[in-house]
Amino acid sequence: MKFRPGAQLAIEYMIKTPHPGYANLSVVDTKTNKPIGAPLKVFSKFGETVDNADELDWSFNMSDTGRKCSTPGNCVLQFWWRSDEYVEPSRGVRGWPTNNTVIGPTRPLHPA
Image (cartoon, rainbow, N blue to C red; front, side, top):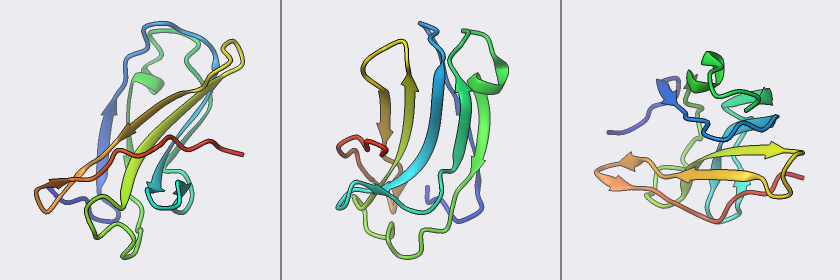
């Protein structure tokens, strides 16, 4: 499976321990540990309950990363969730398959 720019991808997320915060999903360059372009999805409020359908089942459109992600291992999808109720942010880094090779994971991105 290869993701193409503009492809719509579905996400299902489970919140076991609700704690309010904010979150985003980004494509991250594994060499620089920096996002490529704007976030794919942004939640100004996230994780307040375990049953908010908008947070648990959503989709996004894959961005055009140019040639940066054409080599396996160069990019990952990173979901970042920050709550002021907890000291540490929650991070989920997942690679995705390209040319039958899984890309990622990498160190988590720490937003400024």
